[in-house]
Image 1 (cartoon, rainbow, N blue to C red):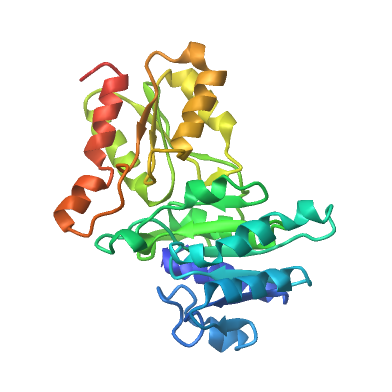
Image 2 (image 1 turned 180 degrees about the vertical axis):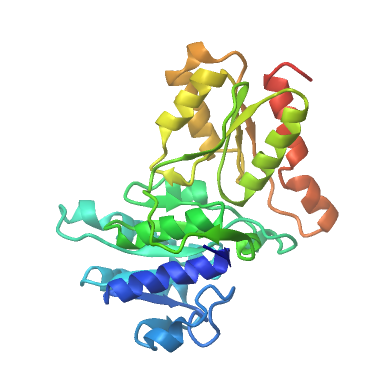
Length: 326
C-alpha cells in the first residue's frame, strides 16, 4: 500500500486502462506536453506517445466531436476538459450526439466515452469558472454521471467508467487533486451507481457527494459531540442514483439532510427529497432539509465567496434542526 494523491490515481487509472486496451486514448487541452492542466496525466505522453495522448487546440466542440466519432468507430476515448465550465462549448456534442446516439440508432452504436475534468468552484475563480454542472448532465438520459469525493473512489470509478459502453461524465475538483490517501497495490474497480456509507449513524442521514463530502463528514463529527449520531452517505454516482441506500438509511434514522454545491433550483437534492417523501414519507419525523449554494453566481470576493459556499456550520445547523435539538 502506498499513499497517493488524487491526481496520481487519475493518471494511474487512465494508464492502467490504456495498457489493458489499445483502443483507449486521452484527448484534451495540455494533456500531453504539459502533463495536464492539473498534472493529472503526468508521464502518459512518454509512455503512450502522441497518437494516444493528444494535445488539442482550445476548441472543446471540435475535439469532443472528434472523440465521439472515434467512439462510434471502435475507440474508447477519454476527453479531458480544463473545467466543466468549458464543456458548455461542447454541450451540443455531449447531449445530442454522445448521450442520444444509442437510442437514435436502435442500439447500433454504443458510445464508450468518458468526459472528465474539474467541476464546481475552486475558490476565487469568479462566476464563469465556478459552476457545478452535475445536475445539468444528470438530467440527460443516456449519460452516467460520477462525482467521487476521494482518491480511492476516484480510481475505482474511473476504471469502471472507461470500461463502460455508455458515455460517462466524470467530475473532479481542482481542490481535490492534492488530496492523499493510502491505495491498495492490487487492481480494483468500483461499480457505477452504488453509494457508500462513509459513517454509520442512527439519528439522521446526511447525503452528499464530491468535494463537499468533507463538510458533511466534518459536520457529522461536530454533531456527535452534541449526542447526534449522523449517518453519512457518499452518493459517488448521481446518475444512476442509488435510491435504495438512501431509503434504507432514512427508514433507520427518520431524518434527512442533503448537502450539495450546486444551485437549489432543479438540484440533485430536489430529486432526493421528492423520492424520499414518495417512498418513505411515513418514516420521516422531520421535514427534509436541503443545503445548496445560494441562487446566485459565485462571487469573486473572498469574503463573499465564504458566505456563498455551503459550510460545515450550515450542515450542523440543519442537522440539529431536523433532530429538534437546536
